[in-house]
Length: 237
Length: 237
Image 1 (tube, chains in turn blue, green):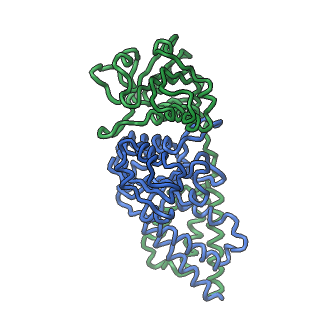
Image 2 (cartoon, rainbow over the protein chains, first blue to last red):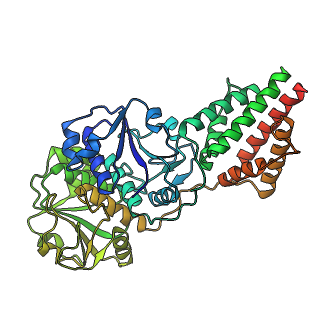
Image 3 (cartoon, each protein chain N blue to C red):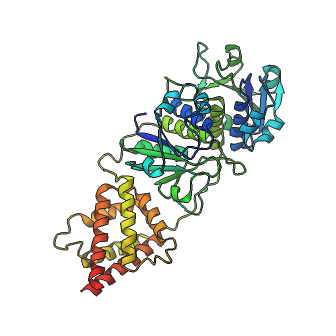
């Protein structure tokens, strides 16, 4: 596997799970582990469960915020036990593996949430796709390291494909977030978004643009449109 | 999953792994756990790792010998990190899932060996097929519960499932075309698009939105934004 894939574990409670996840990664050739505010790390429990994958733990990047973890990432996938009200593009692990295989060598992050509560809606909204592992609806709670294992296994098993996207340069997470801020300001300025009653407008627009996986050039165009729309409104005021 | 499948763990050393395996099974609708000479069982560690799958542990059958575990089984699959000198029929987890799905409702056993040494050759020779999980040749040692998770996941995924994907109401071709016209007029009005020199602007925006496969609701939002932007510009003129 030559892809640049980070496994990002958010606020993991049990250090044993971090070690087990590192082992699961290494069996499938993944090496980049990022820990966002782990409760306890490093830890003897993590090392014990790594069981041969201590090198993954040693190289793990520990950060305070998801922002730091996602810097420069161009494709973000988040694992979720179910599609909540968000109605986001959903992939099975197999579909996710195909999606990843189709990318050129862009930085990719796969997010795994807290043991009890998973990813927050705000975290899920930063993803291009959600991955749901098919499971018994009566008991769908996979251990986090088991979830890492299944997804890493599918990534490893995916057939190599000719990249469909080689010629495009995807926008970084930061640039896309700046665009959303710019868009929101613009919509307020032109009177389309009422900040006192935002409803789900930005959520819906995020969903649309995340689905499209914005390219750098497109972000430039969209921000140019925002600037032009704001200027129009400035003249009007 | 309606198949009669036993998960058989042989001489497991760490009771935590038994609990984690029970949890992995339950997430994929498997309920029959057989333990052949477990080192420590029952155990608080097993219960802790089961984390909601204690019922699987409570119902687990504990036996002394593999003979007892395999009584009445008609199809036996054994997991193995590699095909040793035996040169046995080998299946990937996906192929194993298809093989199981093709059976009528016969009793099936899937064997998982010891943490360090796996299944013995004598045990492997009792199997109809061996299953090898594809993995990095430099580090192919999956945790036993992770191996149970991957194989149970493939068994579960092989079953026909009702699609969970909700029906989106996609915008019609005509509505999308009207949006593009509206967008173009708006971009001209706000001074972002020069009709004398349009370059590839509309083409690029089309490519973006076509990729996203616009929904009806999204087209309504986008046209609302166009209207608001034009009004701002009207006031400006």
